[in-house]
Length: 284
Ligand SMILES: [Zn+2]
Image (cartoon, rainbow, N blue to C red; front, side, top):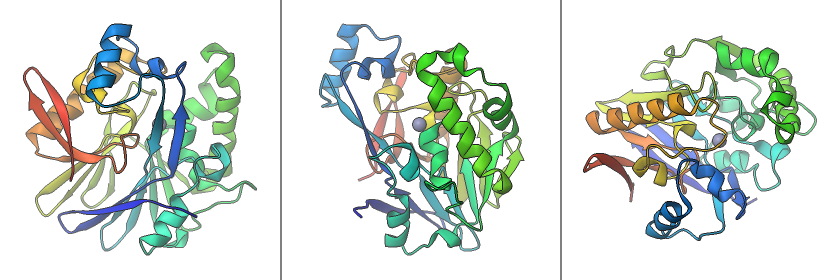
């Protein structure tokens, strides 16, 4: 099976961005990634980013961090069960020299299907036999107990039920954490709520170098420049935008690399201050 991987280092840690595949986004859905933008503003931003006005392929890239002692995956992707275009994490891991049984920890940044379903196969069996899967307690409770799928809209009912099935199938591996908890030496979660109730991001520090895994606080480089535009499905948009701006400020102050799950592959680069705002500089 085809795969795409990109290896880079953060201090002594080996990192591998692994493409799970892409989801095609059509003309009807495209503007919903940019709530808050007028049609004219959006057309201008798409042109400036060499994006077509009517479609793009949404990348999905979990990140492997090998600290030497432990192998940690940030999100498991959509796997083979969520979307026919996804499911390439396992061949990507193999190309980087890892088996599913090598993974010690998976950090689930939030409960959306493209981030959690890689942990189970079509039969509901666990894909990563030794992994502990860390999820923020509030996020787990929201998806498994409290969410009212019908209140979110008819189009989400199936997705929510599917997420619940995935999480239940993985329950024996799930360890609930508080946003901010340590994952492993040098790796910490940070609370970045808003996209979902208890969405978390991850900081990676080694040898004086720093990486911020920003997950779904930003979906495309346009969201770094336009910090008031947001996906229409952010649950708490104002909070989501605050979380995004906090990460962007930190990325500049700490001269940190960022890894963004949905950015064009490999989703790794620097945030640069630009006038009153920011822009993305992909790692060459
Ligand atoms: Zn996502």
